[in-house]
Amino acid sequence: MNKIIDGFNFDVPPTESQIVALAQYHRKQLDDAIFHQEIHLGDFCLAQRKRIYDYTRNLEPLQKAGFYRVYDGELRRLADDDDLHPVHAEAGVSIFAVFLALAIIALILYFAVIRSILS
Image (cartoon, rainbow, N blue to C red; front, side, top):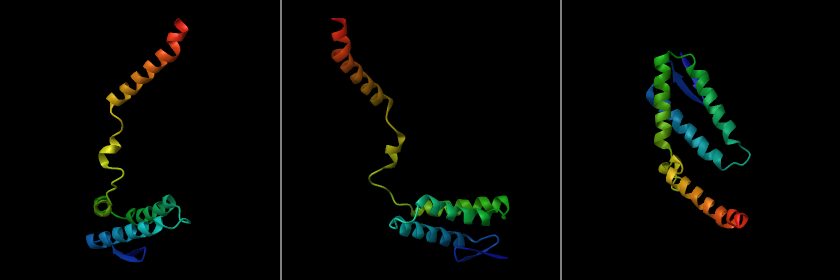
């Protein structure tokens, strides 16, 4: 039994090479879509994922898990590292920086407002 997703013929269950080829094709489509202003990337990616979901809902649970493991793994392997937004920057602001900013604000308020009111 064969199924077609984005022009790729998939066996049931799919082979790893078929899944990798689809992930590479989807990544290429996404790269091409980034430069087209008339394409909304969120809708574009949701459409890709919907086609994959429609295919995988008929697979056995272990086959489905294997499909997503290979597909997501290949997309992660193909992902570009973003030099402007490194992974460690996603952790957020340290608690020390928050308290330091609050202390500076408190000092400014004290010397600018509260001290003049109390005098």
